[in-house]
Image (cartoon, rainbow, N blue to C red; front, top):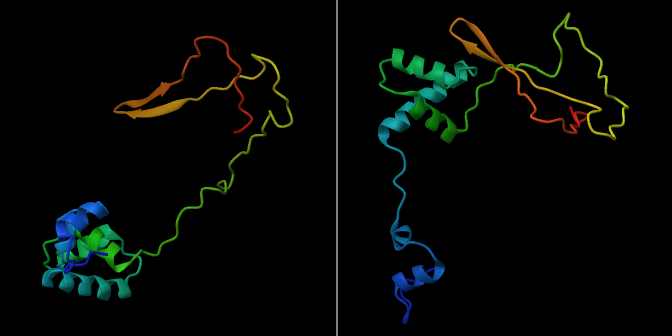
Length: 149
């Protein structure tokens, strides 16, 4: 969109009209260093053998091979290469075997007056010697619709 040989508008004026910085017109991407390309080649070779290796395992493997790398660098390179580890993710939608399913008591109940239905939430916070339990107290009775849960 910028014409370098424009007779009336300089490059700076054209950049200002387009609301872009002049430095972005002159910027040329550098690409990856030779060391990063070597690491990407090693990551690709290892990923073909162990497609379940994520960032942590890949970092650990490369460190064992003598490369001085950290997780942020490996994460960036794997993202650049489009590598995602293959592993079975937990299915939290299905209850575990033996898990008791409690009936939803508000199904079909029409909430049409204050104080008909109350709901609360309990949060367990892990502490050094057990758990801290928080339960919010409502300052005054209000109409709460818990039917969306």
